Length: 317
Image 1 (spheres, rainbow, N blue to C red):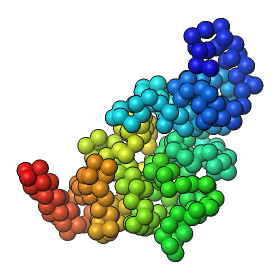
Image 2: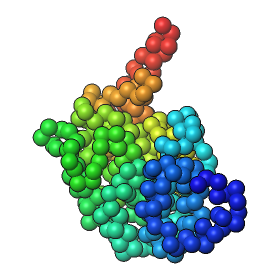
Image 3: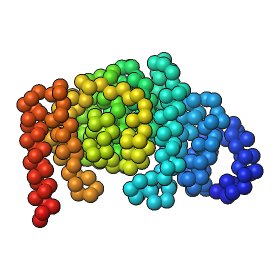
């Protein structure tokens, strides 16, 4: 079906019937590789402006997000601009379409009931980052996430309500990172999420979560965090959120950084390149906090110097 765009008449005829195309049909065509990821995304981006229903627009964009494993050279550093435009389009539409707190609650309530919004959740992450959900909405989000875990065994439930698998957790990390820093986030539930990052079987989620927290705290400074998924770096954090007003609570920034500081022996992550950079990122951010205690800042600086010295010694060997 990728031949359609080569024939403008056929493609225009397809778009003229956009209102008749079901989201599930597009999702199935992409998932079964009847159409390619790039073609499917192009179709979605052309259909989105033709519909007035904001929920349908966001559903289409979320389906487009699911195409990222199907793009050529998707594992290399950098990504196709036409894919990244989907993430930027999502941010723009959230700003444009969701107008107030009641509208935010309405959209979140609809999205929470659909499991397709929880894998690489660009839509949910955009809403939380840009629209400042109230405490009730954030409590609902956290409780749905926490409900997939067995806290006694410190593992992911095999049959969980969101149908989440271990390999989905890295893609969930951006949503949880913006959620724990959202101004109305309940502290008791934040602490449960932070505790999960210390579990031995959750290292992939932990490193992703903490690096995206560093992205937010540093205000998207590329030198202050490492992005496990380059599409989230290029399409959302470094080149997306900086163009929008993002709602982050400084008090919760410090809460998270101090949690890492106190639990750093259990959070010494190694990324896919064998590098241990997360602790250095957190310590650097904490050492510069004007709202942190002096003794914590001094200890962060000392530990950071030790880490940098160890890195230099390793490079010299």
